[in-house]
Length: 94
Image 1 (cartoon, helix red, strand yellow):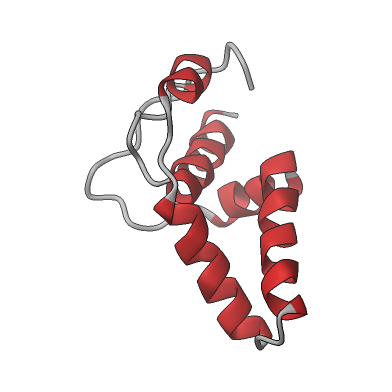
Image 2 (cartoon, rainbow, N blue to C red; image 1 turned 180 degrees about the vertical axis):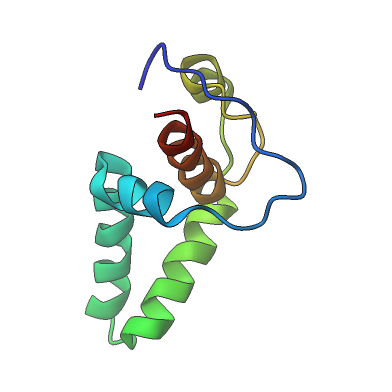
């Protein structure tokens, strides 16, 4: 969400709120994440393995400078982690 800058994720925080997770999954980013899961299941993986591999893939990518400028998510943070925490902070702020 351009122009919406929640506070930065706490370094020690390892879990996201259920509402933040739901909001992420309901977003366009969540739909792309679901597409990644479907790609892995389409290759014959079990759902559990597909989710695990999609999480691993998405966290192998890093938040870049343009996303940091738009959202405030710290540059270099793992992509999935950054977006889930972003939506969690937006949910907390609401």
